Image (tube, rainbow over all chains, first blue to last red; front, side, top):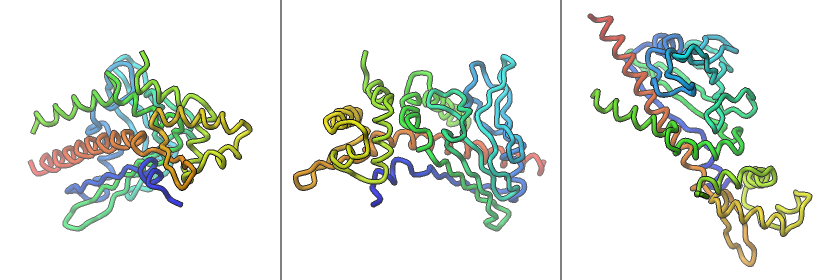
Length: 164
Length: 107
């Protein structure tokens, strides 16, 4: 029996966006040019983020470089299938620290599909929240806490709106 | 100070309670059937369920003369809401970068 709770609680988060670029171009900008678009507030370092990197190969690291000279790992490339798709582990604990254990990490798949007229649809799926175990539920507590990502995200969204 | 959030953290800080949540992922169960899977007494399971219920992680539903326990979507949905917004913001930022590159190419 599949319950509503099952569907709601651990269902993947799915987001899509269509961009005016070829599949190859969209894939390249998303991955090798990751630093050029990744929101600056989205990192788990203790000082401001300087650079965000996804290493383009199976087993590649996802990390940020911080202004204090430290590196913050936050993921690992699980599947690398350019320019159609790639999958990375989301190695972040509910306390917004690094989670070295892949079996306790959720994962994100990104697919790139030609939709004609020189446009590409990017489909992103963040799944396996259940692997985070207790963290999956407690993470949202951290998100809502003062200074958590929820707050930073709010500030970021405000700035975006000002730019428009 | 004990807040609502602390209650949830406490509720999840126990291995038995985490295992109960994992069992309930497969579907609603009455206390008796849940207790069969654990080496502890039925009253002890009831106590754990009370803690989980208070933390809004499970909800009890009467079916006939029995109470079935199931996961409470309300207690979990904020995480998904958060990532939904998180990735929405990230993808819009990505799209802007693509458009910026396209206009640079034309220039």
